[in-house]
Length: 140
Image: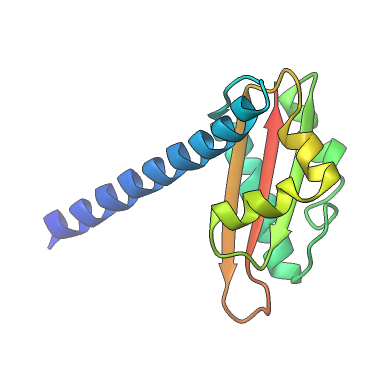
């Protein structure tokens, strides 16, 4: 019983790591297609993105303010460059990325010169019309 539980936990962790690597690869491919540098997942940014996605899900709203003032949320990062993209209603990251590409402000964040790190999180809430809430934080 304990072995099967441990195996399930390890499989979930490996699946999560693979999904995070895939998202970073998708954002990197997008950036490289525009002549920019690669990005990699950053644990601190993932945690902040998860908090924002969870706050939006809890409030069932798509708002940068759902998790509190953005400047205050990222103040502890001590980064020169930092921006946030949010979305809801999309079930997969490719759908989210396409929506962000179609939005001038979100695209500007994706194409931030000097960006090296990202954190992306999705929180599901099946009872909401949005079903899934997304947040990405990108920084140097």
